[in-house]
Amino acid sequence: MTVAQLRIVAAHMLGLGTPVSIRNRALLLLAFATGLRRSNLTALCLEDLAFCEEGLRILVKREKQNREGVAGRKVGVPRGGNPVTCAVRAPEEWIKIRGPEPGPLFTRLDTASGPQIRSAPRLSRTS
Image 1 (tube, rainbow, N blue to C red):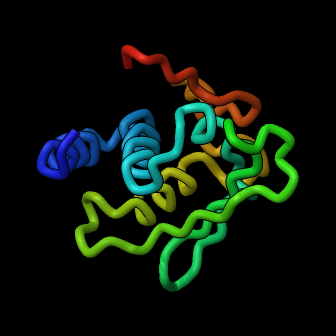
Image 2 (cartoon, rainbow, N blue to C red):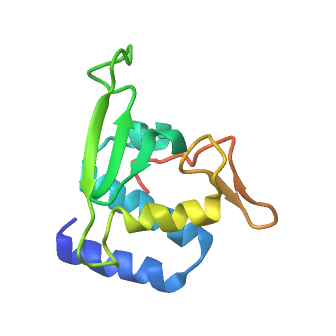
């Protein structure tokens, strides 16, 4: 995906304004900004994120190269100049919907009850 394509997709998702599109936009922009694997993104918990004036610090506890998760790795994401594609603003917007409860960052959504904190969406190679 190119930056131009990312801008188009992110703008479309933002325009939809649904909880699913807000969650998916945050997931997409974090993936693009950090280069994290699907498994790392879905394993992120709210407590792994630290927002600061400069942007976002992410603690990646376990990775393919560090299966024991001994020390983890910190990844910094600077604030972007474009609010549509900012990989810090998008998770902030998602967390407003998700709620402040500890647990998985990217949760399933149920149209009747909202975010389900106990589980994360499955990311497939075809999605």
